Image 1 (cartoon, rainbow, N blue to C red):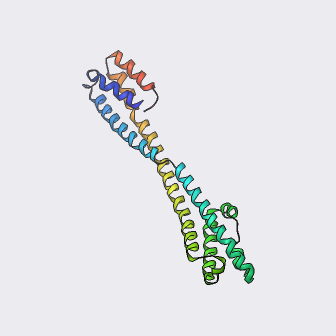
Image 2: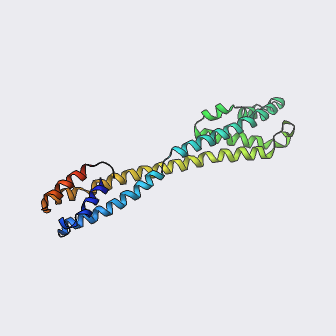
Image 3: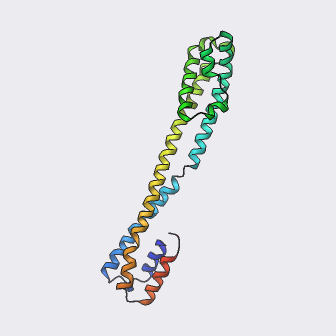
Length: 200
């Protein structure tokens, strides 16, 4: 609607350009349209869906690594009678995935720290330092991606509010000035029609 309205003014400058209040309001409309377009761009760029999917994939990957590692380490814990180690590591990928995110991060940190403490004894179970490093890196990605997603969500909400504000400020003045100051009846009628056309 803003584009259509501005195009109407641009097509008929003789009808309004000598009316200073109208000319000022049209200039303001141009500024609002530029703001509108900038915020629309931010809004389009700040879609969280892809980030949410990436975070889900990252957590699934981390849970799989933890479960694979946990099977080997829990076998060691059973053999040595280390009940605390077994409790820390003996979880399926599904169990890791069902945890709240904060619990996932803290519980996985505990499991990996306990695994590192006995790493020298885990050679026969085919657990390597790289296994622990890879699992730790995969876990570390999860909260980082969550933060990215949340920050983008905030940007999206701000952009939506700014779009609404730009629209509400752009046209009320012209809605009052055009019928009052513009003598050209056809121009006034076409302005009213342009204002009703949906879209930008």
